[in-house]
Image 1 (cartoon, one colour):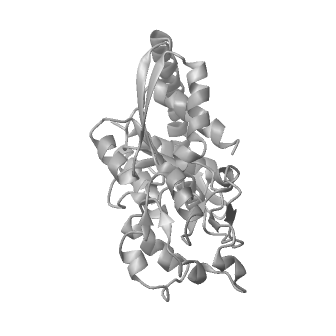
Image 2 (cartoon, rainbow, N blue to C red):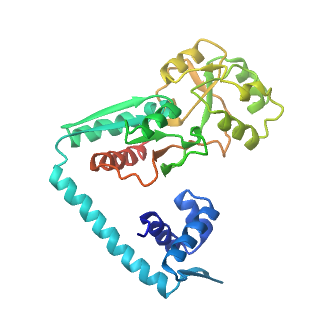
Image 3 (cartoon, rainbow, N blue to C red):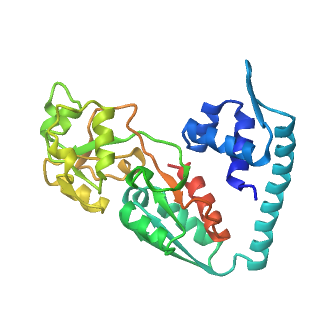
Length: 302
């Protein structure tokens, strides 16, 4: 039986006509996309794509496959609509996990709007670290996670639907000593206590490598944050009453008390990485898909 995911990969490659662009759109490595297409070609025993000077084009076999893929996609969409009609989207329970930063930004608005549209669907939001939520995802206790997939061990298999990225800023209390510094950079920031939610070790090492922080004392990256807390309201209070520094987004910063301020330092590559995280080949319930649609709509408002 043909893997539906590989059909989706072939459809995306045909749309972009470029392996690198298609892989980026699918959140895959280029080599992974290549292996997926090659596996599909091997299964069917035909060449589906050929490389030309103008890009990667589908062969006659590829065109025929894409025609059938569109029919299959329409049938799946109709099946989903039929299931929703049978359920009426009137009752049910939706179990969702979310990381602390997402919970502070657009999760509340999305949940409220979803409840207005589907008032008889119970929603259970579990707000924990991404690693804790991943264990619940594996156990089937939640349908998906809203958060940063970089917190999950890269050896674990997951599917993601990425949200648009937004800049991340550092913040501190008003009259913090760093605000008097002539040169504010990451090295200067990390001379002060750093207050943050749980950060997996591989995530810290990626930050260290990406921003060339080799001269920052390594224990800050090889152990837990100086002050580790997954409640963002408490983090703000910690920063408000100490020299600790933390990070935030503009959507959250708009609700800061006057005692807190952004540090004037912008790093173009330092951005949010929020996504819908699911298990591979996991078919979500109609409730979950409707909620995810609302999440993406609400995220656009922030």
